[in-house]
Length: 360
Image: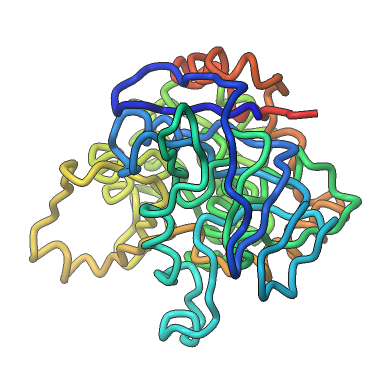
């Protein structure tokens, strides 16, 4: 079958193959035919080595497809079910899951890094984040295949697998924005735009999008931002909109210490600074102990939008059906597998929001 393999961290292109094989699902696993899979900045981070991945690996983690085989002991999902792929499958038994924090579940982490269901040229090939969705088919834990209604097109469902759950979840689950709040979102990529949509859904009165690429400003306004600016215009806009006080919620959706500092500076005293972007382990951000206490700002991690993917997939579906959540607008273009490397290059250049690889 077709699959894209990363052989070494730092490679700028994927090795697009049509001769990769896949092991059958083991106990507790399912085999999913991938119908649509996104190209996300986290995939680029895995290629560069910023995000750890056991290599060689099939990358890709934002996807939707159809269950075609189940392993021993699997009662759900069933063959034929439409599913999205979750890179943090919830076991529903560990202390984190029982505490209502399934996004922190670590039950599948060993298999995510240690299991290699793909084979190529006699070599084991692993899966990025336990997913490996840049392939026609993949094998994942049953809990990682989250059912979605069959009326949701696969390309739109894929947006719920990562970008929307991470971004809108950050606004609604992590920050819990209230009507009338003021919000700034630093980074207007797919995740940042989803934060903006979540802020709009929550009733924020002011939503400022910050991105160095002016081409993204119009898109951010279309998704619900009330204002858009380049980074060098943020301070002036902050003074105009908040009388210099700062924003109730400042989201960092890039994954860099410099933009985390900008989010900290933009938040009001007692406001929230929400980290959404995935950054490098050696990229550190510092704040002095006096300011951390006396400014009263809340630094919040929003891993996977602090979401329960099963619950939130239903919520995103209902909002999409009601015309209140724009999934289609996130997709800049749909491409065949053979154009995956072109899509990666376009994302690096900032030319696109989300591209979706279709395997039909």
